[in-house]
Image (cartoon, one colour):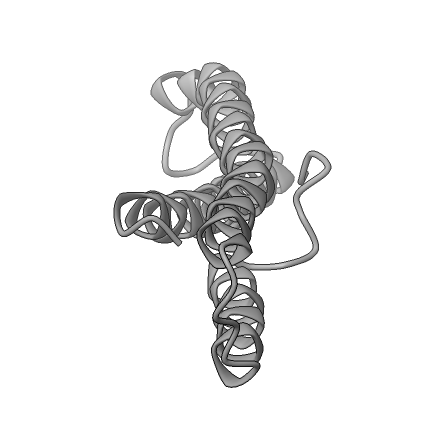
Length: 125
């Protein structure tokens, strides 16, 4: 379950900032406001990146907690045999493993996005 993740990825945000920077450069501003404009653009990028990065970190933590909960249910695996009368128990456990895989992929995606946001912040984008 995803938790209010930003609509835009780190790459999309970086592209938007790069396009804005390109447009500003094409305008060939020679006034004293150019440095102020650059500073404002940098601050804008930072304000956009920080909440998105925080949302991805929060999502990854929620996914970890969700996996921890499912692992508690998987402890039942130690109490079953290879010839259970109720074969649905095997399907139930299989579905729990499927859930973990899905949740782990979501957490991994958030961590990859967080890595991209960190890289953007490091270059001052």
